[in-house]
Length: 396
Image 1 (cartoon, rainbow, N blue to C red):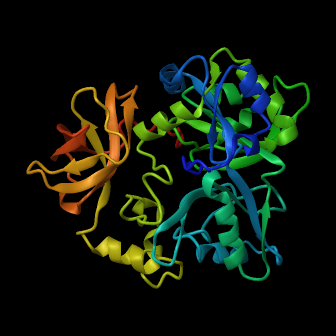
Image 2: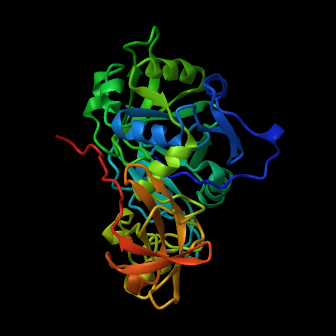
Image 3: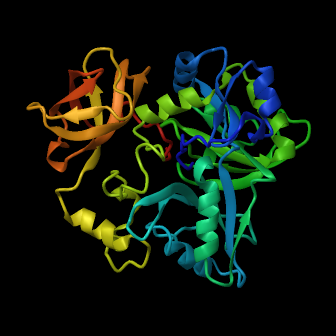
């Protein structure tokens, strides 16, 4: 799925939007907080630590309906037309997508900074293979839609579906065991593929769903898009499984941090390029030249060639004190070399973990550094990401 910004809007509590699952969150005694303009659950009575561990060991269910869902298609019903239009706004190769494939990418500005990151899928439903389905971050979706509207050419349309579609994520090692009870075909999906099908099984009446094998935890799992009118019924049916629990934004953040996944507004923003953020893997080789034709291509090419730029790294503090966002990173001589962008306690890692940017020459794993926590220099080490292994299903 698209990574999720933690950029909270300055919206009065009375003006906060709600998802179709809001009443269920309240009934489950969730702690609700303002998040990206929505009233969202940050944790349930189980608590963030146990929610995190439950997702790693069994299956967690997340309400991510606040994120943006949009379709892009060309009037001539040509996939190539729609893909070429989107390729002017993202560095990923879209034209090579086969029906049922999805790809992670970023919207870039003309200077190569990241406006947002997103998931892009080519639909596989017969008759709709020409259409693209995008999931964008909640805190950026208004700007993303305006960006698309401004730059999509005549003959290519954007259809926002936030007012009709909800999105939930079932994550964890038994996610496949749970969801296959609703339709065995979901077990055939591999990481970063998707399908449209009916979910039945425990349900009295079938629900049509768009199901992708993806997520934001580092675990195997699914993101499921259904109509607002169906999401409560589906969520209740999933929660009926003894090993499925609702999980809030707090554990969602610690899970993605351990997995080394970027959070928009923290680890990535308009000041950094995909290369600095370590996202070069999301840009196919033939899209890495300065004449690739998308906004920011010149900076992407420059950052690939310039070994003096900063890079996003994993940082493992010694001891038990976490290093939070904005913590200064120094070399062992006391010189400032970077800053922490995300940090906290990693329940699976068994201690504090962090990510941040450091000068290129300090990026080698094993490099000792210092973190300035409450005015004191504390030892830490540059490490390879992720802190917890990815358990994505890529096939037998």
